[in-house]
Length: 464
Image (cartoon, rainbow, N blue to C red; front, side, top):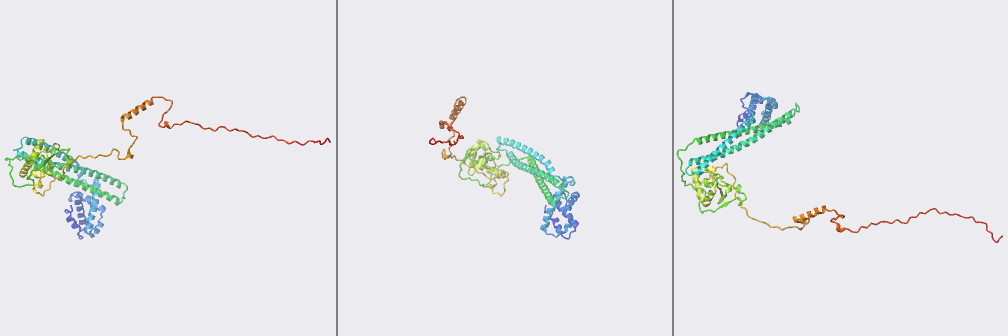
């Protein structure tokens, strides 16, 4: 985008340019940068001009012209994002942008149809692959044309599957961005309803977020357009291949090119089963999970891991039948040498089987993955003490179920009986009961005591 705008940026750097022409060039630059509409569209130009004037008046142009190049670029990015957000907000409120392309709406209409076409193409290709496999498994020695068709369909199926996964990823991102775009517009509407004099520092960030989300939606649209074009070209090429008829069957030519397979002493093979290794279903198999035995005949048949894996040297191989596994196990080098000759006669097998390293090619296979080697399992056991720590033993724990059952029956039997005494766990602590009392003491009352005095009477002394 900046390359397209380079001539406009150079014109904006010219201080001698007329202010009106300067403003026109600035609006054209923003239209191209934001991807809002064609610069020749007068309606889009008028709407963007109004949006720019609301945030960048003509009086500030002289200050902009006198600034340096770095400041101008930063200012243009700031103005363009805010102006694009204003125009998008007006388009959402149906105030402007009548001829503006709704990328989200277009993608919502295109994506389901494209997914349906890809799914139908994958189904048809898979059925054709199964039909060719049946023909080649019955009599595949002399059917070179069918072998090439099967190889082509395998590659075509892989590419279509990759395109379908990528399109689904684009669909997920588009739906998320479309939802975020609508939420941001509604939040901006709420912020603007608070008052006519809303501060710019609260509104401008919302305009920037809307513009950024819109640009991301446009990017997803470009990616979808790329995948759509790629799919159409692949489909056209496939139709041409279907119409092609080979008049003569090419013979396998013998080549003197030596590949990097070890042709020396015979290397022992080892059969691996799911119980033998820890990561059986994660092991990387040679020839992209195709049967090594049928690859030696130029036929691409998927292998079945549950039958077993043959480890030969540092490489693991899978097979589709038990007979194929047993044959390869006896003579692995014969099968590998036969695969060499087929790869030399049909170069399309190099990337299909992941054999570019054998030819010292600097091509990166898009289907290559990290090689995972088998992890063997060894039997091991450890004996520990029954009770390592004495203080951890719970003596009240009863493990004998029959003893617990007997105790439960005794408890039930006691509940049905009536007794005059109660037996408890502390009955053996019983003692004789005594009561100590204080006897009443002798009580007496002390009362008033009568007392008197007598007058002395006449005394006769001597009878006088």
